Length: 299
Image (cartoon, rainbow, N blue to C red):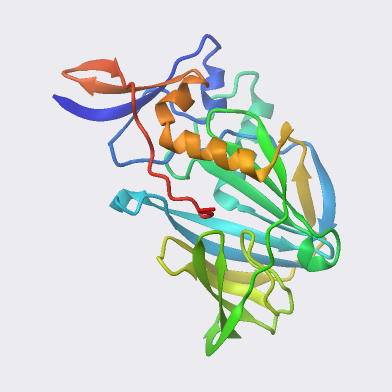
C-alpha cells in the first residue's frame, strides 16, 4: 500500500553537508506538503550599499498550489529603504541564514537542520535602484533548493501603468488610496499612502506616488500586508552579502525555476537528491514527480 512521500539526500559527502543542502535527511512528509527550502547562505561577508532611513515589514501569504489547502505559505518580508537603493527580502530565510552562520562558527561540522517545509523552493532578494534616481534597472538575486549558487540578474522591468480608482481607506493610521496595474501576467490591487513619500513597495512593486502598504493579485494567490513602519533609531546598514553569485538573466532563471517545479525528480537528480516513497514498508525511488507551479510572474 502506498502511504507517503519522503525526501532523502543521497551523497558521498559527510553528514554535515545534509544541512547545507537545506533538507532534513529522511524527512517524511505527506503528499500535500510541497515546500522545499532554498539552501543556507552565510552572512559573515558583505558590502554596505546604503543606510536605511525607513524599514517596512510585511506579512506575506503565497498560495503556491491553489489546488491544495496545504499549498499556502506565510512569510515575513522586510523592505529597507535607503537614499539610493532599497532591499526587500524574506525574514524567515534570513533568520535561518543567521542561525546557520552562528552554527558554522561554533563547530567544524555544523548540524543545524532547516525546517525545509516552511518556505517555498525559491528565495529572492530585490535591490531597487530605479525609484531613487540612480540606475534604471533593478538587481535580483535568487537561490533555488539543491544548489549553493545564487543567481544574480538585472531586471529591466517595464514601468507600472497604475490606474487610481479613487477608493480610500486607512491602514496602520495612514490614509491610503487604491491603484490597479498589470504586472507580468497578473492584475494587482495596491493601497499606498502619500504620507510616506517613497515610490516603493514589497517585491518589485513601485511607481506609485507613495509607499505601498498593501498589495495582492486579484486571484488572491499573493498578498503583502504591511504590519509595521519604523524609522531606525540608530545607524542601520543595508547589506549585500558576498555569496557565490552566478551572473545570468531573467529568462534563464525563469526556465530553471520552471524546470525545478515541473520536472522535480529530474531536477533533484542533478543535485544528488532522490525522491522516494514508502510502499509496504519498503522505500522505492520515485521516477516522476512534480511540484505545482504557480509563480508570481507568469510571463
